[in-house]
Amino acid sequence: MRQSPAPWSPGQRAAFAVGVAAGRPQPLNNDTLIDIAHVTFGYDASRTILNDVSLTFRRGKVTAILGGSGCGKTTLLRLIAGVHPANSGRVVFDGETVQAGERDQLYRLRRRLGMLFQFGALFTDLTVFENVAFPLREHTGLSDTMIRDIVLMKLNAVGLRGAAQLRISEVSGGMARRIALARAIALDPELIMYDEPFAGLDPISMGVAANLIRKLNDATGSTSLIVSHDVQECFAIADYAYLMSSGGKVVAHGTPDQLRDSDDAEVRQFTRGEPDGPVRFHYPARPLAEDLGMPA
Amino acid sequence: MALIQTLGARTLRWLYSLGHAAYFFADLVRFSPAALRRFGLVVAQVHAIGNRSLVIIVASGLAVGFVLALQMYYALVRYGAAESLGLVVNLSLVRELGPVVAALLFAGRAGTSLTAEIGLMKAGEQLAAMELMAIDPRARVLAPRFLGGIVAMPILALLFSTIGIIGAWVVAVLLIGIDAGNFWSIQQSGVDIWRDVGNGIVKSAVFGVICTFVALYQGYETQATPEGVAYATTRTVVVSSLGVLGIDFILTALMFSTP
Image 1 (spheres, each protein chain N blue to C red):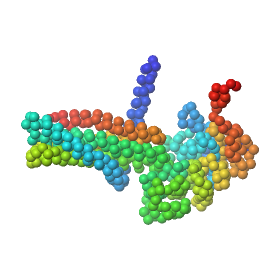
Image 2 (cartoon, rainbow over the protein chains, first blue to last red):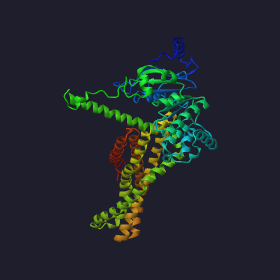
Image 3 (cartoon, each protein chain N blue to C red):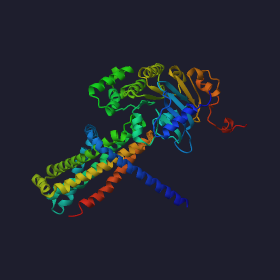
Image 4 (cartoon, rainbow over the protein chains, first blue to last red):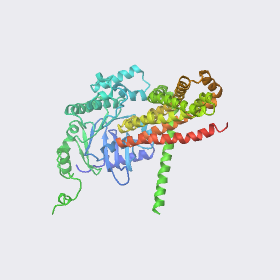
């Protein structure tokens, strides 16, 4: 399945455009939580990170965005959260176009999403308990007793209720990731974005993290978006997956089974972890003999 | 032609940085009233920032008091004015040395600590995480520290001056043998609480604004790398110190221009 087709039918797009033109957020397809349409983005004019990508994320599903390092996966999450504005194209969250410059709109939107950072991004001056309580204290007027109960429930969901009083310096990398997950779901967000949730974890922690993502998604009815290069873990829990290339393009998408069975050379190379193929192992360079000064 | 272009580009970059810093300062001021409503956060920062500088302020104040008393005694005794020692030491400390030296020490100790703390929070994506939780880090993290620095600085300066005067008393009265009654009474009659002590406090509050603003700005704008944080902490000391010394001259001219 090379190249992403338009996620909505032309009729749906036209009707959506009418809704937007009328100034109303109008989700046409109730199944769709996020629609990324023809987005191009670069941090500066000389380097394009995302090149006319179109993706759709369905409500209540676990969707994986796969690709090698530097292909723009994390940038895509940042665009969804409105950290950066797209150079062209549109990011639509639940019928509302994300405007990176509109602070009030962005903060309203961000209260509906949770994000798990690659290294947790936990507040190192707070305890495990206080980290999870942080968004609750900032955004709700709940009593200390209620906050305590919610935090303990969230920590229980990730298996770390007993670690509530530890300092962040006292927990392992895998535990930190789970604490960050508990913090990300503290406000029961509609969308949870995971940035490389399996990176640097041992096999047991990796399996625990993957199961947690799937279970939390199903238990809370939220939508999950995983950015990763761990093919097997993602395929084990994702309902749908997109594969991105180093040129910032979507090269393939489908269910894990469809991608696994794909006969496309780039998809095969990535899913099977082959060292050489359409994606070259060597960075472009002169021939080795020439660099070593040997006769041709 | 190339020289003009380079000069123009540098000037534009400098103006851009200045404008950026001005916006940042305006943000800190804008978020400060909201931070005051969460008084516990500000008190925690006054405690943390003040504590960081306490030891060095006390030790330096004592040392400066010792040396000042000795040097002034050597100079005054030549003119038979050794009994004025207490007054000279007091005015030097409360008007000038207390606010300025305390601010320089504050920049080197608490300022660099603030810069490194904010810089590492940035490098660890803690500030980005806050942003994505719909919590503005300028309001939650920076504004309480800004207010904490402004409150802590005059307290530290007063402490510096007080310890300095006690140090001078040790040298003047206990070692040199100047009459203790004379040492204190000449201060009581010669030091004006508003003009001298009050202006010293105002000065140190202004220095608190400068040092804390520079420290927070350098930390917030640092490149999120070990080299970036190291460079930012160094810049905090340099920029704060130059700012304090430059503003001190202007404030002194404004406050003490009339006899």
